[in-house]
Image (tube, rainbow, N blue to C red; front, side, top):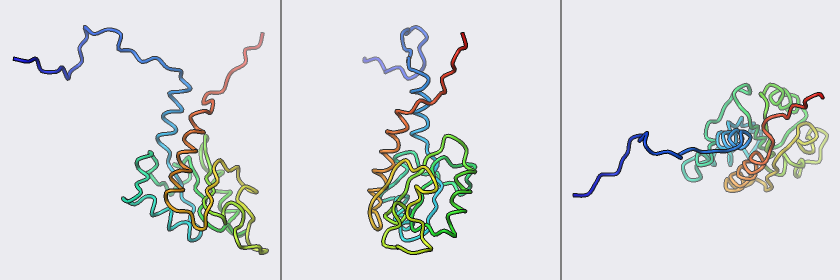
Amino acid sequence: MTAAPQLAYDSKIEGNVVVTRLDSAVNWVRKNSLWPMPLGLACCAIELMAAGASRFDIARFGAEVMRFSPRQADLLIVAGTVTYKMASAAKRIYDQMPSPKWVIAMGACASTGGMYRSYAVLQGIDQLLPVDVYISGCPPRPEALLEGLMKLQRKIEMEPSLQRLKVAS
């Protein structure tokens, strides 16, 4: 007769301790639980919605909880053409987000103004907000958004999560 594998906690086993740096643990939690705030302004928003659908499944990367309140989001995805009229709203949304916060510029229009060289279109959201990841394309495919999300996760993983306190001597 074979012994069944133990599925419960066994207090006699010692040495089952995980040791890590606090920075690494905090960054692991941050990168795997991003809560995006979608700012869909044009055709790129359709591709953003497709990334949340079952075919592409943004949930695999921990970013499926789309928040429509800036106070509950930590990632702003600017998808589409940013006009000067919408620029103040985008800035207000970004300012209302709690820190730490990140920004993805999705598509040619959000990154550089795209084909619109007009008095009404902002020539890149980076003139207004600090952008962490740029996603190229017009409109970019959902796979490109997922790749940009993975790049952002790698960036978050390398950030110092806790501010170092200087001890006055």
